[in-house]
Length: 638
Image (cartoon, rainbow, N blue to C red; front, side, top):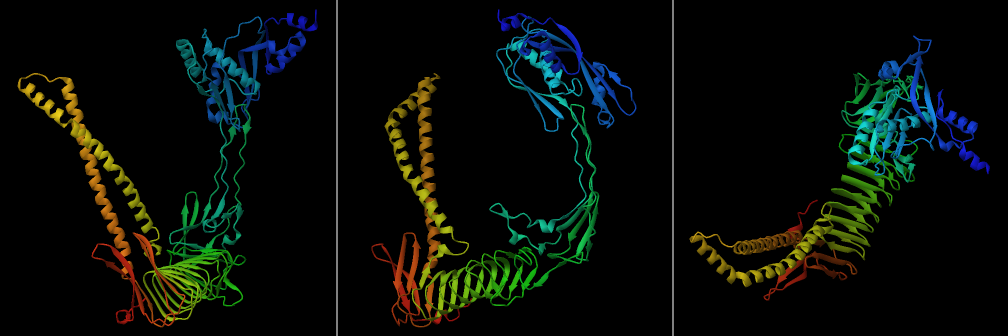
């Protein structure tokens, strides 16, 4: 007979042992009795719990019925408390002992080992037997022992929940769903809060990222704040709370640090407000936060030599404040506002140049130098000496436009050498070549000196109206599709109504006759009448919808016509002679078409507009109208 066969004939008789490490003991019994460990199991018959603390240097034994003393948080959190458990365990051979069929039970633990959760999974294979809830508990307890977790201490209502699951099995012959139980709960530590000083005005710009990296150009050495804004806060420290895990291990929480508080000196422009958890420093007016030798102040007007990455970073006070920023650098070979920085204030005055990718946002902007091709300005009113970049504003005045872009409502330019201008009203003193000029109301040129200019009248491209026409056309197209479908539906229902009208009248007359004779009409008669009435109601509803949508279509077209009717009052004025190779274009959206005209050399058409002509046959034509009469336009101002 082989050695394996001999091992399989060995059986372990039930044996009771007191131990604190049942799994280690199981392996010993396996080795001593030459029985594979998978054939040996155990059940915990009783738990022996003892503790020591500062008041009790000798172990105090706690019975299983008295383990609730550990539910007292103050007692459980005593740092001198030490808890130990041993178990009276019966080991047995599973081949000669009945083992109940249990569902799958998963045990989960949080990172601090202060909470144990068990999931009793749904099962149709389990068979109820007496004390089934205890058998479920025994399985969970053995898993806790394996993880060195105390049993019976702070175990909530685990046994009650297991009893409910056992009852479900007894009644339904199945565990109908997954049940999640909070098995053991220790006490989570609460982290202490260190004393700290928070500079909120700096945090506005800290951490701005580009492509995962800190945008150092936006670090901000000068910081804008508004009236009533909390700019600095000093938070007092807060003590934490110690904890204890479900293994009985004490979790010590470090004391809070007190070195995060520094002395804050302020001027009369900042309010100091004492609160229970610290001190807040609040701006009493809008402006820039300035720190000078440890004293913080707020200034409304700030004059600095330059704004760039090295000296200031971005400056963002907000356009809704009364803050004025003056940048004094005038050296033509340097940038007053450097590459990539953002400047935001109520008013920005720049004596010199604006660098690449710089952005200015303000109500009023004055630039004494030139803007880089990749610089951007957003304002209500902008006044620029030499413009090569992009500006978007309500009113713009530019000494010299050199290939830059302008989007505004009113624009006044002294000299233009290429670029793009879009506005309702545009006034140009001297126009060179290669410029695209788009307006909705008026373009006026005093001296035309170049060619390849494009004069466009197009209301849809105006500031704040870019999407209006497109949206209107989209609504008209959607409504047109809806109107195309309705006539077919109306016709189909009308046909059915007409085909059944005669028979319905006959049925109606019969019903009235039966009613007079006090005879209940057949159900089929009443059903047919009801179906016919519903069909008529549906037809009338569709007819009403069709009429409403037609009215909506007329309204939309009228609105669109009003939008583009301004094109007929729009004018392009050249106070001198025209030069050839300059194009004039009027853009219509409904019907979509462009009416263009190329100017001729020395042509003296002072005013060019678009005329709408309705012929006798109802057709409409659009024609370029030229005039030399300037009287009506002499008083045009911007």
